[in-house]
Each structure stands twice: as structure tokens, then as C-alpha cells.
Length: 78
Image 1: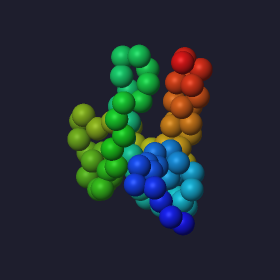
Image 2 (image 1 turned 135 degrees about the horizontal axis):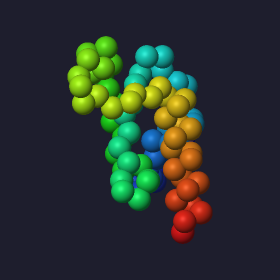
Image 3 (image 1 turned 60 degrees about the vertical axis):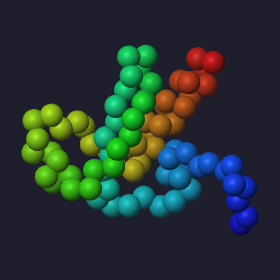
Image 4 (image 1 turned 180 degrees about the vertical axis):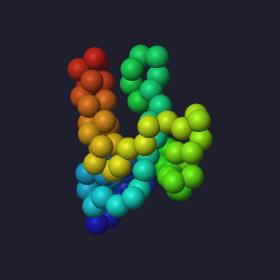
């Protein structure tokens, strides 16, 4: 597969294409408008969940569902 230098794959597309990784966790931040603005991967979920300010963590499948919903919402708003 030859890729164009301007080719850019989104996280949503990567999660769809590749297999899920067991134990990988993500956090999500939403803006005031309700759209996802920030996604971060958590490297040590066991340590992260001990913090008081810890956000809800999602696995690969749950994150893909959230990103799909966000994509559809943005598409319908345009």
C-alpha cells in the first residue's frame, strides 16, 4: 500500500481497522458544545484510577463507539 504524503488516518479509522488491545485504556474530554475535543491513552490505568481527579476510562471498543457517535453528531450538525 502506497500512502500519499498528505494521507492522515484518524484515531477512529485506526480503531476500526486494527484489532483491539486488551487492557489499553483511554480518557475523553468534551468541549462545551458536547463534542469530543481530546482523547488520551492511559499507560498505567491501575495507578491512574487512584487519583481523585481521574476521568472515566474506556477500552478500545467503548472509545470507538464514542468516536462513532461523535462523528455522526458532527456530520448531522454540519
